[in-house]
Length: 124
View 1 (cartoon, helix red, strand yellow):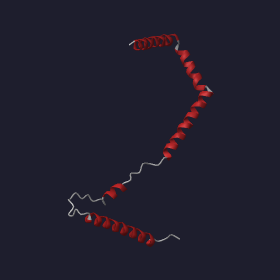
View 2: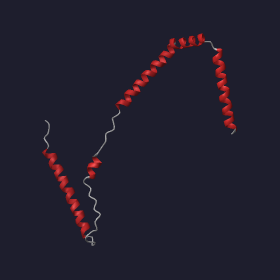
View 3: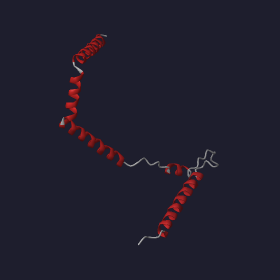
């Protein structure tokens, strides 16, 4: 609680000091300082460097590739068949047949892909 009280006291004291300082400085003096800042070559140089840096950063961010939504997983999901039926045979023979069928299906797909690749025209 002591830290909070110290913080609150510092805020009040800082605000009061700011109000007093603002009331002591005339409007002409404030305008003069603003004009000096605007005409200062160092400030202009910093502003130009900042503008160039932000422009470079914008260009770098724009050069990143956009997100591409890959729906290949959804297309692959169409090939998946969920079979929740009870197996007809429990001696393991149906599992071996299923594995054999799956292996043959994969070979057929590989053969088809190889045929498609060989039939594709070449650009010469």
